[in-house]
Length: 208
Image (tube, rainbow, N blue to C red; front, side, top):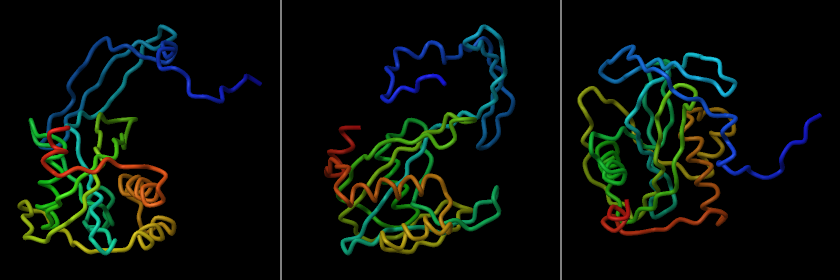
């Protein structure tokens, strides 16, 4: 049996894993999906095809009220034909910064405006077939306003305690990948294991 490293290898040693793109062909460009097929050279010299979707990126907002409750949504997702429990989230517009997108999406979908923001990190939800990344933002010091949903957008906004959300993740009522990841971040932030750098909205925007 081969020895298994017990520490994370240096990324400079990844040449034996990397693929190199030889050709790119556009497959489809729809209203939302932009799909491609690449011909790549594998580490052993052979060629293979890789099909994937280019995505502009997105944000997710873990917004917490003063009493500790979380702002969540219920939204029907056509590909899985189900109403899903999710954190507020949305796609980046062309040229839009990550925080600006988070502030816009939180207001449009929930009606809330947050004074304090902290960028937790980034996740790649579907690395096997998409370039999509999701920036994870925490938001606090919320004030309620009026939602501005896009045409054709229908969702319910509700609140739940962190304990309720974690229970729903555990019993299978929450299956959305980004929300499960958000719950992991939330759990570690609340326990003090992971520390956030909180800033006023304008200051956080300047940092991004």
